[in-house]
Image (cartoon, rainbow, N blue to C red):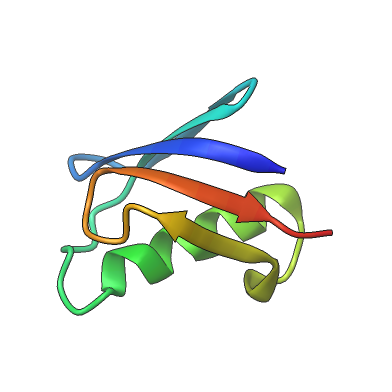
Length: 70
């Protein structure tokens, strides 16, 4: 499953609308830490392992494409 993800850095939240996920984190985007936090939150939301969530594009952007493997 492929999702578009938009990231905000103001408060903690997660909203899923069809193929769009809006996520808020407080982790600073340094050395990939924010991406790790995004993967953890999405995996927890779907009840799957972190290894099944991959960022396909947008590693250094607020707008990302992620894939959830089955």
